[in-house]
Image (cartoon, rainbow, N blue to C red; front, side):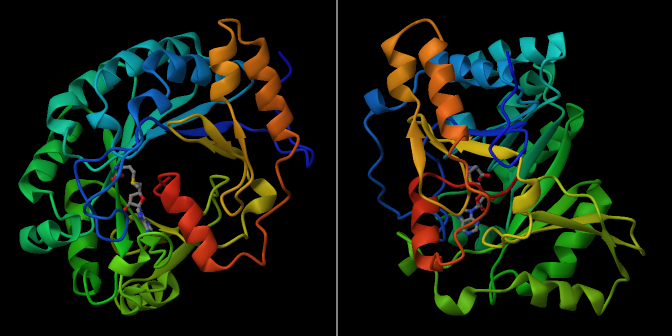
Length: 333
Ligand code: SAM
C-alpha cells in the first residue's frame, strides 16, 4: 500500500494512540477529581484498537505509542500489546512504546518486555511522597517507584516525564536530575498547559516556562544542545557533567511543524492531524461499518490530505489547552 504522505510531503510514521480515557490518578493539572468518563460503548474495543493500529502500520507508521488516560488500567490491555507485537516481529513496526503513570508497571513490565516493548515513559513530577499524593490526588509514590524498578529489571529503558510546576517541583529540579542520573533514566520536562477545561485546578502562578527551568539548569551544568528531533514538540540537551540527556517538551510551540510526522487517535477513534488544531476525523464509523479495512484506510487517507502545514498561530492557549485536555493528551512523547 502507498505510504501515508501529507500534502506537504511529510511521511506519517508516528501514531500516538489513546486506549482509554480512564485513569487511576487525578493529577490536578490534568483531570477534575470527579470525572465523567465516556460510556463504554463509545470506546473502541481492543480488537478495534488493534485493527486501527495495524491499518496505520500497513500505511507506513513505524512507531506506535500507547497512551491514555492510563493505558495500563484498561481491562485486557495486554491482549492489545500481544497482538501488536507481531508487527515488531515482522519488522513492519520499529518501536512500540507506552506512556504510563507507572502504577501498574510492577504487574505488567515483564509482559510488556516480552511483547517487544523496549522503552516506557513514566510520568513522575516529584520524588516526595507527600507532594506526590497531593498532585496526583489518588496516587502512591512507592507503588510507582516499585513499577519503575520492575521496568528496569525487565530490561526496559525508562524515561521520566516531569511536568514543570512553579512552586511545586521547582525545588526538586536538581534532585530529579541526580536521581535519574543514578538510576540511568532519561528525563524530560513538560511545560504545563495551565488553561483549558480543568484549568481552574492549576493556579496560574504554577506556570513555569521551560526557558526559566533551562536557565536554572545552566547555573549548575554545562548544557550542550542536541540537534536530534523526533518530529514532535521535544528538544534535547546533554549535560556535560553527568552525560545525561534532558528533554524539553513545550507543547504549544510550533517550531517542529515542518518535520511533523505524527497524528494521534483518541480512544473513541477521533484522529487529530495536528497538535494545535481541533480538526479531526472520525475513524470509528468506518471501523464499525465493515470488517474489511477499505473504508477505514480511505478515511485515514482523506484525513491526512487535510493535515495542516502547522499550528494555527492564532489559537489561544485556552482553546488549545481545552482541546488537548478533552482528548486526553498528547504530551509526554
Ligand atoms: N496516564 C499516562 C501518564 O501518566 O503518562 C498517560 C496520559 S498523561 C495525560 C500523558 C502526559 O501528559 C503525562 O506526562 C502528564 O503529566 C501530561 N499532562 C497532563 N496534563 C497536562 C497539562 N495540563 N500540561 C502538561 N502536561 C500535561
